[in-house]
Image (cartoon, rainbow, N blue to C red):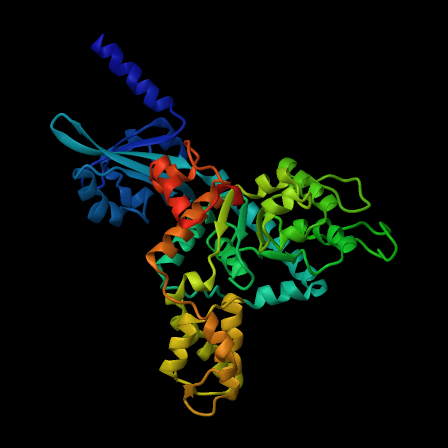
Length: 466
């Protein structure tokens, strides 16, 4: 039975579709199955001792001897390492290599599995060629869209942050970037929602391709459909030629729908179809086009309130709301104000040929308490204006920003009671006014239901407001 078992084991190894080798510590070939011999031409009966890893894995043998063999002896398993297998005729075959240590008759050997990945490499090359062709197609379309030209010129995403509160937002960006998930970025005007969208795209597998952007609030309703889905020649008056829409431009890439809350209801239905079925047609066409586009949407509007008002489709909201990110306002990340000021000073020094090095401490203190209703965009505008007006090396913020009316609006340090009131209100807003139960505000705050109701009464908070 033992002999029969050994025979069956040998036949199983020889008939395996992958290549299997045993290597000694010096890289010598002890055994190679039939698949290995057929692929490489190294026949064991010709004298297996004269074949060495340096002959058939020339790019890998040094690494095997100096790093991987010691690692294998320490219990490490080598997995999915790409290299090239060289045949006796000189042909190089791309392979994935995995290895582990085995003990046999008081000796140690490396058991190596090699998988031919020629087809995989060919497919990757074909996809790369296709994407390159698509990029060429995108670049030709750029002549029709100045906004896309500006995106191409943007070589980096400048997200300036040291505030711990904002690191949570950036952590969400990093988590979702590699997933093909639809993302909804919410936040006030001027918080930099498009920067977050660009960061997600730059960290994604589609980063080699252009991120396409459309601002849903800047185009007339009758033109948005053509911009999104394209149109055929003669589809409407003035359609003198075929137009490729944003979804096709963003094939195998990212489409950023800025101000998605401004989409007309009829277009919301068509966008929902693309998200559900992954298909669309050009305006005036009957050819179904499959969408291979990752959607990132952004809005500064309260979409849930718009749903209640009949202005936004609830089913579309939940399709977009797969991974929500709330981009917090500048007043909630005040530690970022000084580095942002320094960044904008350097940016506008270059633009306006200035040499400003610092900001007056009084002005900085005032800015640290300023309400910034326009968020980062307002801060940037303030700094640029100050750079233009400043004559020396120390930046002065124009006094009109700090007149008596604005000083009264500067953010004061909150009392503990005020902080509790704000925190409970945020919890109630998230739970839509529910206090108790598994989805209630008490559970969210880690409090007893009765304790929370008593605290709300004391602070003058009513659940009916939410």
